[in-house]
Length: 122
Length: 433
Image (cartoon, rainbow over all chains, first blue to last red; front, side, top):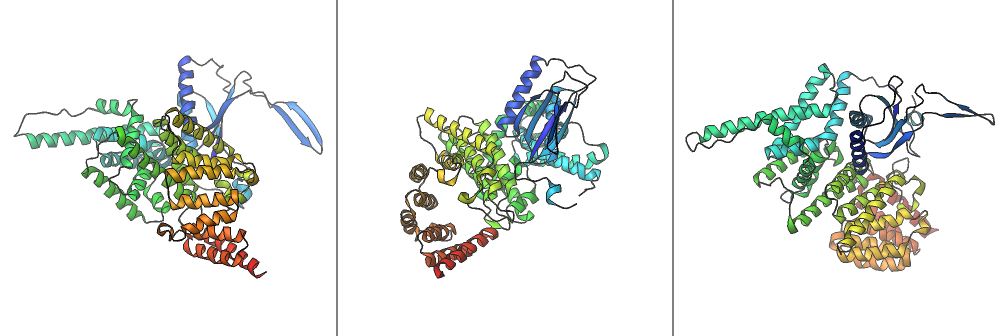
C-alpha cells in the first residue's frame, strides 16, 4: 500500500533553516528508506496554491486556499507500507529526526486500484 | 463501512506493526548478547507480551520500538545474570574463575552498537543455515526476519499453526545442538551460504507469486515480505552481484502482480496482461538493481549469475511496451546462458517457450518433446500446459486439448486449473469446428 505524507506548516513557529546535523541525518534516513523500498518519492512543496475549477465548460483560476504560514515549505513523501499503522510508525521516525511539527498521512491508490468506497457498498 | 475499534484492538495493531518493523534487529542484537537465537527470540517475545499487557492501560508509548528494546534488554540482563550465577554455583568447588555478569550498560552497548547491520546479516545466515531443512529455513526466516506471526506463516503455507510452531521449535533446537556460531561465513563458504540465503528468499517470493496450492493465485503480502528481505540483504552485502540480481528479478516480477489476475482472481498469462497496469516504479527499481548486478559481475571479471540472467529475461518483458515488441531472440540467448549455468528441465521448458516465440512453435515443440520422459518433470503441470499451447499454435487441437486437460488435472491451484480447463475446452471446440 502506498501513503502520501505531508507536513503541515506551523503558523506559530517561524521557519528556521535546518542545522547541518539535521540535514545529514535526514539525508541518511532518506537514502536508507529509498534503498529498503519504504520511500517511493519525497520532496518539498510551495505552500501557495492555485485553485482551478471547471464548471459547465468554464474554467476559473484563483489563488489559494491561503496558508497562514506563507513562508513555510511543505515537505511531502510517498511511502510503501504494509498498513496505515506502519505508515504512521514510519512517519514517527521522520518526526523524531526533524523535531516538533504536524503532518498528515493518507492512503493513495495506484491506477486500477480503487478506494474501498467505490468497490464496496456502505 | 465504519469499524469500531476498541483500545485493545488499536494496541494489538500497533504492537503487531512495531514487531514486524523492529523485531529482526532486536532479535539480531539479542542473539549477539545471548549467543542463542532461540533464547533471543523468547526474550523479544517476552517484551512483546509485556507490551500487550501494559499498553492497553498505560497507552501506547511514543517510541514503541525503544520501549520493546528496553524491556527485552532488561530480560536479557536478568537471564544472563541468572545463568552466570548458576554457573558459579556449579563451579564453586572447582576453580575460582569468575565470569563477570554483564550489566545493563554492556547490553545497551551491544544493542545500540552501529554493528547492528552485521548482526542482522549474521541472523540471516543462521536462519538459512544448511543444518536446517529447506522448510525450516523458510519458516525461521519468515518468523525472525519477516516478523510474521505463526498463524500468518501457517496461512501462507496452508499448514496448521501447531505444525509451524513445532517446525520453529525444532529448528531452534537443531541450531543449538549443532552449535551454529553467530557469524557471517567467510572464504569459499560465504558464496555457498549466500546462495542458500538467496534460495530461501526466492522460495518465499515464489510461494507468494504463484501459489502452489489453494484458492488464491497470488499472495502479494508474501512477495512483499521477500522483496523487503531482499532489499535489506542488498544493503548488507552490496558488493554481491547475485543479491542485486535476485532483487532485480523480484522487483520486476512484482511489478506485474496487479496485472496477473482478473477481477475474479484468475491468472492472466504474461502476454495477455494489460501492460499499463504494470508498476513502473518497481520496474525502475528492478532495472536499476539488474544494472548494478551486471556492473558488479563485469567489474569482477565474471559473467551474470543465474538470478541476474533471470532478471535480464524479466527485463526484456518489462522493456517491451507491447507483446510484439518483445525481444524473443535475446530471451532465447539468455535462457541458453542460464541452461549452461544451471541446466535443469524447468529452465529447458522455459527456453522452449522462448524458442517457440522467437523461431516458431515447431522449434519450441521439438525441445518440449525431448523433455517428455524427464522424470523430474513427471508431476509438473507446466510441461503438458506448454506442450498444449504449442500444439494449439500448430493447429493440432485434439492433442492440445488432451495436454491442457492433463495439465489441469495436475495443478493444485484452483484458479489455474480453471484457466487450463477453459483453454482445453477452447482447443476441443477448434478441433471439432
